[in-house]
Image (cartoon, rainbow, N blue to C red):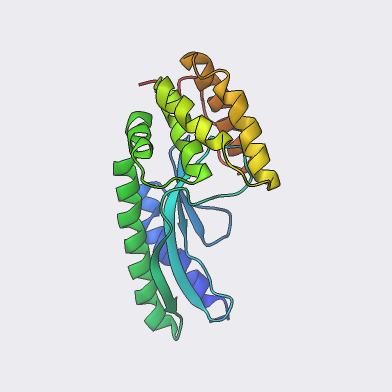
Length: 214
């Protein structure tokens, strides 16, 4: 077998375990996605720069911030490094990683079945980073919880760092805060952001008109 055989073993395990769930491989990468239109579950069989093998990272990526990259907005490392030694030995490792990924995907689906569940989860998160405030604000605005949305948008605005991405986030937040009182308009604005993000991430196009309706 070729040098890349451990990658082929991972793909075979992922196809066997994740494909039946409706997950799909992102191109030819070691990343698999679980698509829920306004969020995606990200399953990354992360390689190491030093050894052949794989870590496993699984988490939810919200699509209501325009970007061309995937992020672990909730969740991340779930399995430490499994090193490739032989095809036979690593076949078992890859299956274990895929089964673990399946468990995490099902947990994410159970945690975020609707925007209402997601907003409640994000509202109660104990983390208080600028991104936590942004995600909680957007999800609150989508369900018409204007008070929480305004409070969390205000928290984003108080961020002191001068990094370019912080200033960009604050600018976008200010624009959203101006329309959050109108839930229909706010949903339309966020649906447009989701559509652009899906395009940037080369995800399938979908109908977004009623995306956040109860």
